Amino acid sequence: MDATAPSLPCQRHLFEVPGDVSYLDAAAWSPLPRSVREAGEAGLLVKSRPWAHPREAVPAQAERARAAAARLIGAAPDDVAIVGSVSHAMATVAANLAVAPGGRVLRVADEFPSLCYAFDRLAMARGLIVEEVPRPEGGDWTAALLAAVGRPGAPPLAIATLTPSHWTDGGLIDLDRLAPAVHAAGAALVIDATQAAGALPVDVGRWRPDFLAFPTYKWTLGPYALAFLYAAPHRQDGAPIEENTGNRPPASGARRYDRGELNDPVLLPMAAAGLELVLSWDVSAVADRLRRLTDRLAEATAGLGLSAAAAHLRSPNIVGLRAPGGLPSGLVDRLRRDGVYASERSGALRLSPHVWADEGDVERCVAALRRSL
Image (cartoon, rainbow, N blue to C red):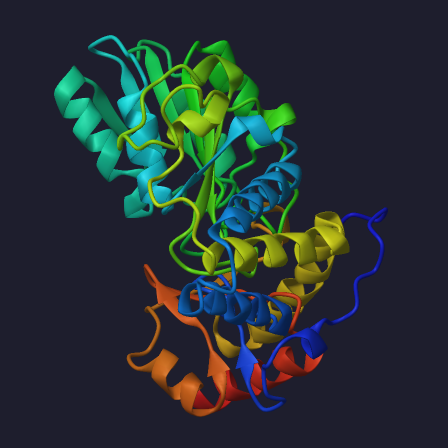
């Protein structure tokens, strides 16, 4: 936990989460704050009554959202493209990486498909070797990845596709240690910050990725079908995967990768409202609050036959609980009937609270688990 981060109280009053619901599934998608829903409803009027809402006002919403996304990750607005999804972002990235045959594409085992498919295609086209680092026995992904980056005799590292934590259970992937090793190997660093942006500090100035992407529908409390792609300045002279009048010259910088139909009057104001709300809290304070909740979940469930990775080996915002013989069938459904919402991912019960959650949600979850198990 960050001792310097200001204490952030529970923000449930900003959401429409009932008192008898423990929604611990932000890693899947978040509920919308009231202010974000209202921004979307106002945007619907632009499309339903276009004579009363000039289209000329919408591009300013795109730049508002772009600026907020850039601020969240420590970037300049000119370095951020607006895209439709993280998979859209990764397809753009893979199309703009020139790599020599025989190199490695490095990633963790059981990675989320959006960070795999485009690079699998690139590997087949360019003669690259895809190396998946197996799940480490002790849960230390960082050490396992560092060993893979510097393994003697291995083919040269061409691309490392990494995330700040494993999406299935929050296993920590420490980019503060890994990014310098990737750079020293002369490889491109591609980061999927889906399970970090909005919940943990993300800093492109510190990690220096070639590309970094994140969506709005999880931790930044925004809508579905919108994402942002950061492109380092030396990666901004590439080609978009879709051509449109908005991303052709004189468009420059990362705007060259902007999606078509950019000026959505509904999604852009929603995304901006969610991002600005998160920024108003200080992400370090968000991370500190979530660490306290996930630590309590891990400690309180230890006596139920469930185990989590050690606190220093997991991300503050997600805790994955595992059972020695595997989770019992139907556990997530039984929890839902008790008003507790979570996900099962790759054998782990993934619990992911956000700022609407409090200690009462932890207690309700533990009580429901006790009954279910």
